[in-house]
Amino acid sequence: MLVHSRYVRQGPDYRLGEPKTFLDVRDTFGFAAVRVGRWVSDEESAIAANLVFDSLADLAFILNIPPATLGLRQSLNLDFGIGGRKGVQAHYAPANRTLALAKNAGAGALAHEFWHALDHHLALAAFADDSDISPVSFASELWLQDIKLKSHPLNQALAQLFQQVLLNGDGSDASHYVSRAIKLDQARGSYYFSRPTELMARAFESAIEHCAEVRNQYLVSGTLSVEAAASGAYPENGHLTQIFGAIREYFRMLGQAVAR
Image 1 (cartoon, rainbow, N blue to C red):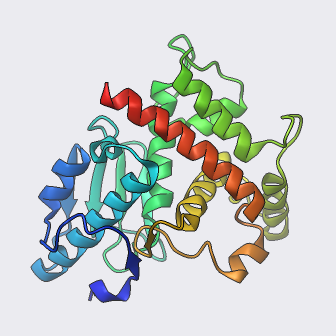
Image 2 (cartoon, rainbow, N blue to C red):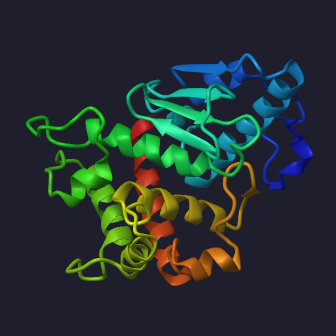
C-alpha cells in the first residue's frame, strides 16, 4: 500500500494544500499522456498523484524552468503502476518515450529517470541534421562519439555539462568520477556504472539531492549516504558542486529559450 507520509519532503507548497490528480500532472508538466495501472486503487492513485506532482514541481523549482518544460515538448509519456520489472524502481523506455514508475517501488528514482528521458530527447533535438542518429540514441553517448551538435548557445552549454561530468579539468582524459565507475564495473564484471547514460543520470540525481533548497525522497534518494559516497558510484562533493553549476547554467538557458 502506497503511504504518502513515508517519504520525507521539505519544499514549497505548490498545491496550497489542495489534492492533485494525474490529469493535473499531465496538464501542468506538459506530458503527452499519463497512464495509471489497473491494479492501482483510487486511494493509491490519489496519494501517488500528489507525490508525483510535488516531485516534478520540486524538480522544476530546483532547475528554475517552467513546469511544462518537463514534458519535453509534450513528447514524454508517464506511466504509474503499469507493468514493471521485478526489483526495478522505475525505468525509461526510449522506444515509446515513456517514464514508468512502479507503484510500490518507484520512489526515489524520478530524477534519475527524467535525466534518461532528457538524454534521449536531446539526441534527437540537439545534434546536426546530417548525423546518422538512431531513434533510440542518447545525447551523452553521441557527444562522446564526437557527433556534431547543432550550432546553438544552448547546445554549447550542454557540451560544457557533459565535459564537466565526464572529462577531467582540461578535457584530456576521463574524470575521476568516470575512472571510479570503470573500476566498479571491473570489480563486478559488468558494464553498467560506466555507461555514459548512467554516469549522467547519477550525476544529475546526485546534484538534485544535494540541493539545499528542497528535500524530496520521492524525487530522489540514496545518493547522500556514507555508503553511496564510499561506493564510487556518485561524484565526489567538490566535483558535484561544479556539476550542479553546469546543470543550473544549462537549465537557465533552457528556461529562457522556452519562455521566448
